[in-house]
Length: 188
Image (cartoon, helix red, strand yellow):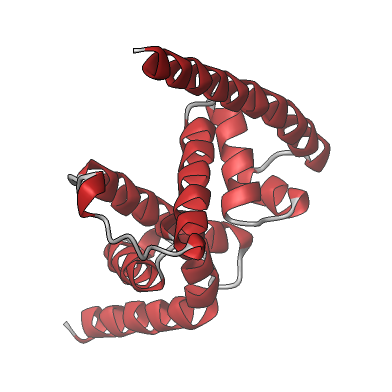
């Protein structure tokens, strides 16, 4: 029984170390997705709750795979929160305060664009999705991605280049479709 308590204490200590080491990077990642500092804090805390349930899945606190695991937990939590929030009914345009300033509109537009980019990345094949999300959302270098995924750095660079081209095609098509919808709505 005493060894089980030590095991629990070791888990708590490891979680504390992970929190101290990765909380800021996780917060930045979540903030980029949610564009809301309070929601980003919530996302980081929810991610750590999930990590605490799976603490045995983490390796050495300083390893690239552990960093990737923590950042992925924050990113996925933030994405889930963003998707959930986007499904909530919004106020009709008439009820929006007219004093909404330009910076708020800029933030909304950049958040929408970011969400489009995230959704586009998530629609790619796994090999491209993994490298692009680690590169753009978790801000890992090609070397760190290669170490994390067990691939050669040259392979990761090639997948980044091909993935970017695929991503550009997807986003261009979405923008083209959006433009057609806007034209059709104006003609109605």
